[in-house]
Length: 148
Image (cartoon, rainbow, N blue to C red; front, side):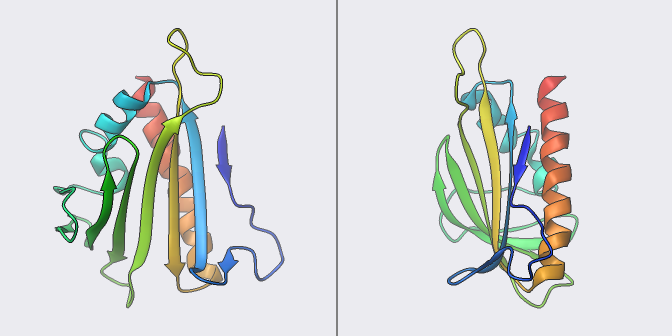
């Protein structure tokens, strides 16, 4: 299941008072949290961020082979990482948060985790629509990779 903030005809969908335009996408995957977290920061990193090295240290810079750059804002092992995220063609950065938490009704026999992407400080409705499509595609790719 993929969850996200709906995109309606209402012009303020995705517009917040404090963080500007934002988008959120999440997906439940059939793997334990520990496995998902290790994958996201290891072999799965190129799927959601690009080929780069990501340091958990606050302020650590990164740049991907796809010309996305930023730095680490906060890091909580096994749970959440917040980054600035800026493609080369953007004149501003955004804040990207990746969270992993236990899925409801998961157990030792049927493990599950929720992967959530939340991006804020987008420039407007059009950028929000683009990023919604991007993150929906990313969670599907992560699910496929974790299932194989």
